[in-house]
Image 1 (cartoon, rainbow, N blue to C red):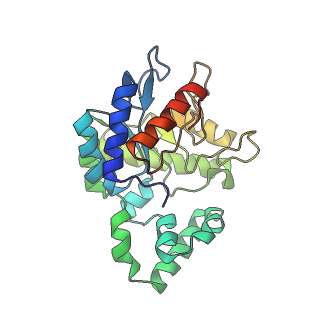
Image 2: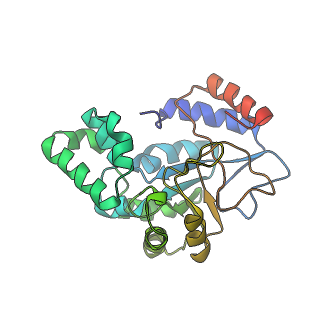
Length: 260
């Protein structure tokens, strides 16, 4: 999978960040557009390895990070459907599954798991956090938690009310589990084409986040944060499984041109 970084490379990337930026900020910082070069580290979905593997490395470098949690997966120990596709060798079905409503997605994944029960051991390596683990995780000084919907749908496939409920349930569960109401979130997938003609979220998504008191939401398209950046569509860059030297070169490109 392209979204995973080995612990060794993650440590090398943090070395580069420490040498490059003056500040590493949590996504809920008062201001993201700082007078000195700054960066936010974010993780999506709520995987257990964020706690077990990434956090000890973050501790080593004293760097905060923000973790956006898909609460239904945490509460119900649901595997993420893209991990099931990967384990089944069916990544070609990614767009088909992504376009399904949440209930239909869940049924499709359940059918795959039922037909290939031996996959559960393999999926243990990419399981979500448990509620207990999340509670412990949330108490760490370097950890900021944000909402990431309840079932991780592509929001633009839902009605305005369905979007509101997906985000609200995630916010409410995080508050119930941790005692703190999140003020930030990230859209599932969150991609946007260069001209905005294809987008995984829409204005109903923005409105739902505003109504729920969220003051900043991360998307998933390249760019730097500026004073005029829409707080309900903050750009982010995907980081691949790059060693330190490759990451340093990519980062140099980002700082000069705004793109990895």
